[in-house]
Length: 224
Image 1: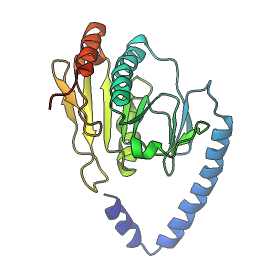
Image 2: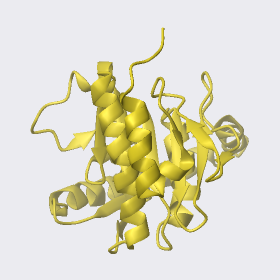
Image 3: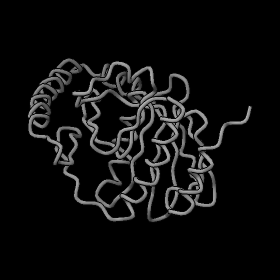
Image 4: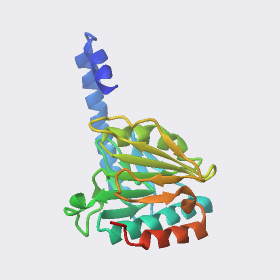
């Protein structure tokens, strides 16, 4: 899709003028982005998306409950198997144009070796989770979906607390667009593409008791 857009621009005789305008706009936007980073602190939940500062309002219990349940399982499993690092909500992710604070991120171990304790801005993760709310759903399904894929985030989960399901998006090979969503219902299991061996019931994200039972399963030694 990106190549087709570039080709269409290059077909225009005023392509250079168009690009000059775009570069002028992006330069001004970059200054605004740097001001956003100076303003942002640990008490603010905000993102910089396509030149706009997007503030996040407090979330409902079902949102943070889903986040807590999945984080609980992910952190245990990733640490137990020494696979990398998990970050929750306040990790600022730097892509080429936008800055995001996803609900949950995961980086493979080889990427985290370069992280420092005082680091505040991080590269694109290998796995991202966003939990839908009324204020974030549009961006989660459009701009973020496109941006995460374009920057090589190999796996993207969108959790819908209202419908109690998870949409799983995966990048294959050198693709820059996700495959169509594989929707996992609450009665089904979901297996991560990037976190080796991590497979859980979808219900473990929404139900406290099933979450505890799932943790016990994850604690068992792997066969073979």
